[in-house]
Image (cartoon, rainbow, N blue to C red; front, side, top):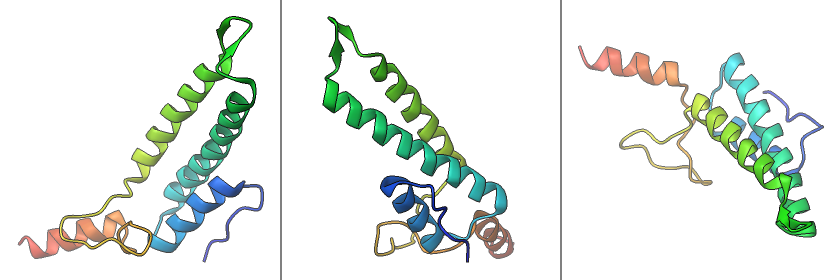
Length: 115
């Protein structure tokens, strides 16, 4: 089993651990997952700073607002690459995501049974 990278913060560790537990990921998917976990940690730091300093700095919107928006967009794209969604008819696991089955395995099974 792949270990959770030590440098991840709480949010990143949570995402990474849940995905490892509930999905069988390929090496490229693990790389995207690591980037998503690091991005969610970065976003958490930015959001904490915005809460601390406020959304307006010197009468202007904080530049951190734009950075948070960019980090969210990156996170959405990375999570989209992973395609970690429930298939029709699959029940969610304990944490609300589908059981461990790789995308390739699902595709192969559908191909087999659709003949």
